[in-house]
Image 1 (tube, rainbow, N blue to C red):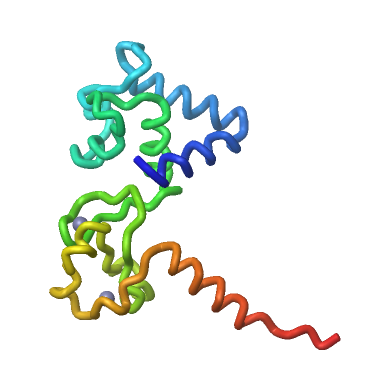
Image 2: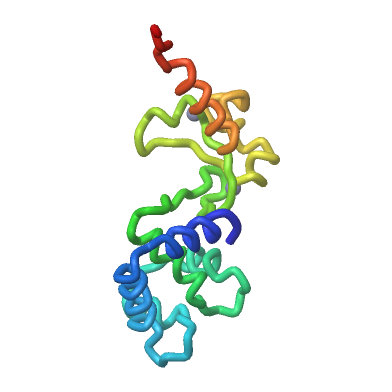
Amino acid sequence: MGGMREITRSYYERASEAEKEKIKLTFAKFDINGDGKITIAELKSLMRIPEDVFHKLDVNGDGCLDFDEFLCLHYISASKMPLVYCDGCSQFMEGPYFSCLLCLGRGANTYDLCCSCYRRCAESSHEHSVEHMVDHLSLLKLFREEKAQNKVPNKN
Ligand SMILES: [Zn+2]
Ligand SMILES: [Zn+2]
């Protein structure tokens, strides 16, 4: 897990001691045999989780979630991190991806592509063409430019 893991770790570092304690308790609840790792069987006995999401969260591929890997799951279920699926290959995307700018304003009906689907021109089956597909860094830049333009000049 690339960017998302960095972000969720950062949220955790800034969380209050009470919140950290709560997250640790949740981890302990899922870690039924107390070995410091959560297996998919342990997780599935307590919550519904798509297998592909589990495998994406399991960065080192050992079939278990350690505490850092679990943090991503925690922030996803707390809805702090959006769970976005690629409209090309339906995979859950945890890293940088591309979004259709024209579809973004339509609420839940966004059109998003993982980098490899973007590279293989998956948007050719989408109603909007490639020039409307923007990556997240460029999206942030557009947002900043818009903010700057909307700034009312100070009269004094
Ligand atoms: Zn894809
Ligand atoms: Zn679109």
